[in-house]
Image (cartoon, rainbow, N blue to C red; front, side, top):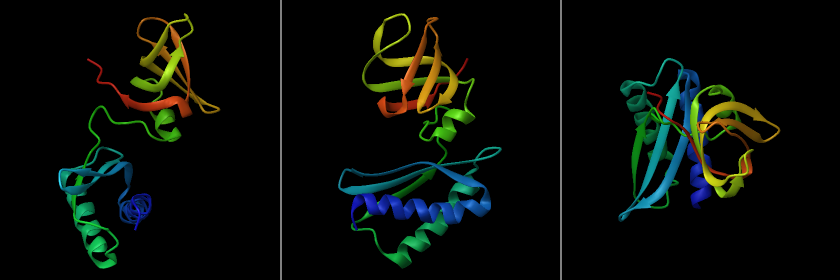
Length: 159
């Protein structure tokens, strides 16, 4: 099974396991680290994910992966929370975390409303509309960033 197919199938399985428990998949990584592949899941739920939640999903997923046996090579399974600087992956994430401090890195240089070119934008997330996120930057400017230009986005810890 190809890497993309593995990611898609594991995403489906995690949704089946986590849905009834109120657990959502934030991110999934399937990549080579050293000699082995790592299948890394980041989970969340309303009120916060617990160690028991992670262990429960890990056990159930392991059992299903053993039965279905579609993983093409040896892998290590890791299940955890996304942490306080969680990534923003879906439009729903940008909507949910409106008003929070974020850091957005873009593929290309983009211009803020003051004409400054940059690839990193940090500020208060105002929202997302028509595929464009809006941020009030910490330096006082404003930026509108098309989602298809976002290389990486995450919450930033606020002191």
